[in-house]
Length: 292
Image 1: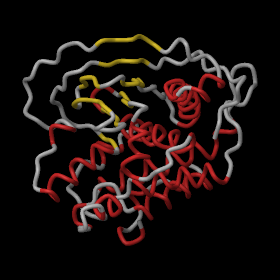
Image 2 (image 1 turned 90 degrees about the horizontal axis):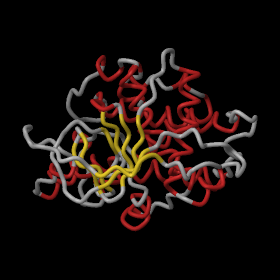
Image 3 (image 1 turned 60 degrees about the horizontal axis):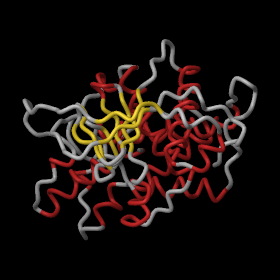
Image 4 (image 1 turned 120 degrees about the horizontal axis):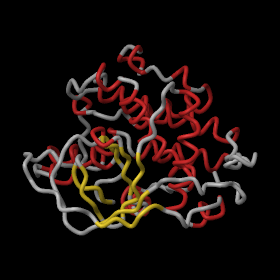
């Protein structure tokens, strides 16, 4: 899915931030963050430092702030630059959710250059995109898409990238609408709240992308062009890549009782259902565990 070259994304408030030292934290909700948590027990190593979770009290030196992405003005910029694609996604996501959530409050979006400290731990391409509830902020290093290609065999094209940032926006919606409070972490497993939370975020991302070609900028220009079948398959491929079973298969052992995000098949199915049928089908918490 490519942006309309004439689309106006100059109103984005996306920030760029980066620095070189890691700081502990906790509470992030993200894609590769969970890979670290899954891999640790499987390989007998402690990777919690990658995703925070260390004891509090550490000082967090201020990160360098590159300011907002004022250079990202048009859809053409979004098509040629990954940072600007994220800035464009921010504009369109905020437009979409403002229409669907009463009293919508936009999250911050920070494009990470290298790594930077957050209240939820260090943000970097090694940790992957995540949503930090205390900050109501999404963090994403676009070089993560290269890692998806190199380490997990994903194509990670334009629509897949939008799926990923849309998924993290879904966590923001869960936060501001009270879903996270109503269904707190209750451990792992195929029917856990964690799995339901992640599958709902996949569905939310699908619903947004299914509606995205109807969204227009202030001049009446559509933000994005209609996706091709190849691009949709690419987004589904990204959903497959980050399934619990697919990740665990890399170690040669799959343990459903440790699932936190859902299987590849589930992630693809909930994304596709949202894409085809919209937000009304995204209540993963009312579905029996064996129907997820």
